[in-house]
Length: 539
Image (cartoon, rainbow, N blue to C red; front, side, top):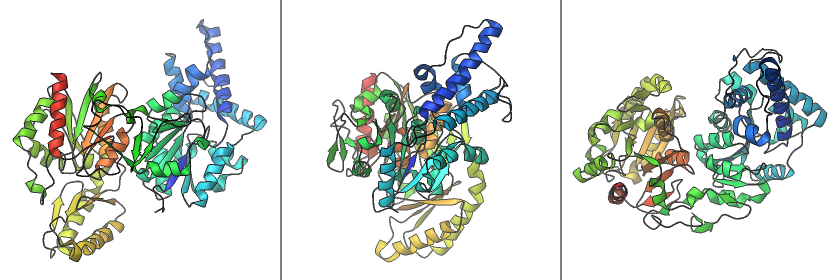
């Protein structure tokens, strides 16, 4: 792990490292204008040229080649066969047009060449000097050749591009697959990594992946588009921001909810230091708006953790019983809001504890979801069930003699609770046993929470992913709806990072601390007071 607050930076290629965006625009324009003119000649369909601002930026920029073709054609109401990846550039298929664009691009590249942004190269060298890991994640199948042509291949420890995406069947932007794969390749957690992008689809991918900081570069002047797509900050060039600024960002603290319920703020608290928007750094306005704004004008859906959020933290998990007052508050919320519980507990367990029908439940950190009209089990998690069972049996045996230890048995995960254990005497023993088992099982990963070790499937799925799945299943969107999450523990940070800058995260903690959440309340009683405010807004 780095001695700094973050471990890695993952860069997009075109428009961030290399100045080939104009070559791509020219290539797309050549391809689509020729296609559209042929349609006019054959069928009398009036020709309307492909433009940079109206077509390239919203429908093509940053996407894999064939996705870009489909995006643009769909915007014009044009349907053609997808075809085959081997289609010739003369074929009027999605693949044919995509292949023609690539031919055009290679011709432009050969005749005009690629250039690098010197400020980005200087920044990469600074990262290298500080031993911060570096990766490239690009939709381009020409990424390797472009890096080689400008002599910077050795500056990066991993490259995940369009060729790798096809080989590994990775989803393109705005899904986060290529960024997550790059982070995995260099052994870093997304939460401690930065994504730098110039396309809205890439910014969305960084946000969907739960990365610690997503920086948009607005070389096209599209500052607002990048911010609305989920960028934490937007700059015109990487030289506008310093290494120290980025390092400090990872100490971001949420604002006290009561103090900022109706009042805006013009700065972000970075562990006591205030950061403000400036002419060079555009901070996402979501970080500066009053909390109340989240719950008006849009349709809110409220996601809630259980332990530590709806009930106080207790010595044993079975003692965390929902009070009648809190249950009534949740029922009151349901009259005007969509409500979901997202818990580390088993789904059936938390469903029984809450005991409210018509609500959405996601258990096992989101691996098991059930709502009034749908249900879902994360498909890759099924194969890990036998390993989780083996882990439970192992911990029951190896840690059986430790007084106060509790092993929570769940279908897709297990938790080793040590709140009642003599930590001075046993903590290292417990930690060593848990790590020993997880280290030898590639299908498992370990997370630490409040007096608990969580053993989970080693799959990129977490509470943030579960929230995205439920939002999509309900046909809601981050753009048109207010997505809110209230939680108190380490695993809730996954949700906060996915929602950050396009939703609202509320941390429940006795003391203010660094978090990806937007706002902070002290305890479950404060959560109940928030619910009352939300009910009053609607009444």
